[in-house]
Image (cartoon, rainbow, N blue to C red):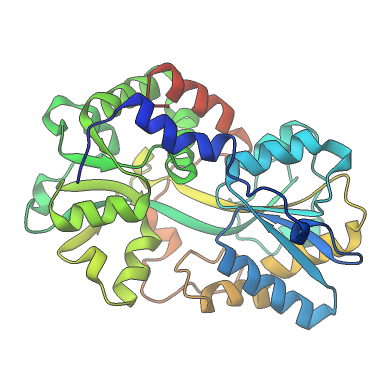
Length: 341
């Protein structure tokens, strides 16, 4: 059932992401001698597929610790030079910039960055994109026509949309979208949009719940990432029945494309192996592993085609944002200020 935003309830959703999103360390988390330590906030099935293919190609053993973007980024910062992590993979880049700004990343080999499509890598050169996902508006085709849809994501903050849209602001995905908006539109405009969300949106736990809410008719439209819809459509389609997607395009903040990121830790005691892993992930072989996984995220490597069901990455007309400028901490503070978290 839909529910209006409630700060306490939203906090209960967000707190695990902020404070406890990383699973508590167990004996299985103890670093295994000789194994490359991968701290991953990417979808675990994708990371496992990449790690398995890397080991098959190089013979280098890997060990994965799974977590969430923001909490894992802050954990690496807190661990500092004592961190066991050699490589950090994130779902969205703002968590990577948290580690970057704390001086925790080594420069990525230029040969690795050269394999990534132009315009996607951060200006800092301290991490590499490994996949991309687009912001979309999902809408219920039985409740609203294409002509009635907003032309911009910014319109959702207007009173006409009160109670008619859904989102999952407690998640790193949505917060990355806000980070892009903040970088492009500035504090005042982003704050006003978030205030509209706080007063007028239905709050859901995650992207899938948002998609299901639109499909069931709880709300006519919702904001999420593209690949949840495409993955469901490639399956039984039940969670996305009677829905379609709008790609805002035109450089709108609602066309923001978020980069999943990979970085090598400055304190790694296996720096050469870590650089090899990142080179593999962005290589043609590694990017094909991503595509073949059925993740429906965009490949970012030169010459590697994404799933043919997806509109091309170039056709999305995403706003131009240097991912080095995105800050998850600034977004969390802003969302806290307006009472969402």
